[in-house]
Amino acid sequence: MNQNKKYCLITGASCGIGKAIAEECAKQNMNLFLVALPDSGLEEIAVELANKNQVDVRCFSINLTQTDAPKQVYDFAKSNNLIIDKLVNNAGVGSYGKMEKQSPQEIDDIIMLNIRATTLLTYYFLNDLKKLPKAHILNISSFAAFIPFPKKSIYAATKSYLLFFSRALNTELKGTNVTVTSVHPNGVGTNSRIKETLKQASMIAKITSLEADKVAQYSVEGMIKGKKLIVPGRATKFFYILGSIIPYGLVVKIVGWAFRKV
Image (cartoon, rainbow, N blue to C red; front, top):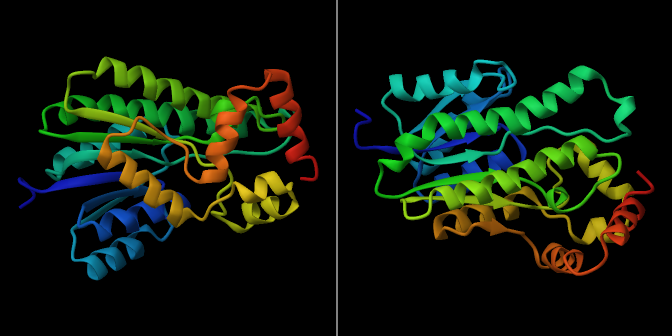
């Protein structure tokens, strides 16, 4: 039944940017393969998107920090004859505070999800993507990828990994049908905790924040156009350019000041 159908695989699709990307893709008549944590309401979201947009939506609930999770996602797609032509690596987690205040488990979860899951999902699906007439990989990174971020050191480092991973992969795939896009939003009010954090932050952090649906629009549009790097929002793009020309040490001070009240 699915032999000629193509699907957009989206991880972390039950909330925040992932859910918004799923909604944006469904509006554009893309069939969806959604992945998220168990008991996250993913099945209900899948039914709602399918009924509202008349697209085929499949879902698979799994914790991507598990060692064999990326392979399980790939095996599910293969066993159900789902042809993946767009891979959206969105699932991610972060924390705020000094490194020594975080638990080893917390640190491990950030690295396993933000780096390992994204890398292995890309690895497993890449050869299949290369066999299609046109295919896309979309990695949801962060503005933190560009800057040293005190009190978000591990999170920012994982997002820097996604930036350079995407750039290097694009070079490896030059001349193929696959494009890799990395997206770098600043603050996105994806849940009540993050919204409260943004309220306490400086004016700079507030004016560069965006709603998840706007990030989704920028991301999906850029992915389809084959853009390699997306910095969504005019204010965020301004600070991206500014950060590339001012001294590195000053960037660290500005970032620390912007979130000093958190």
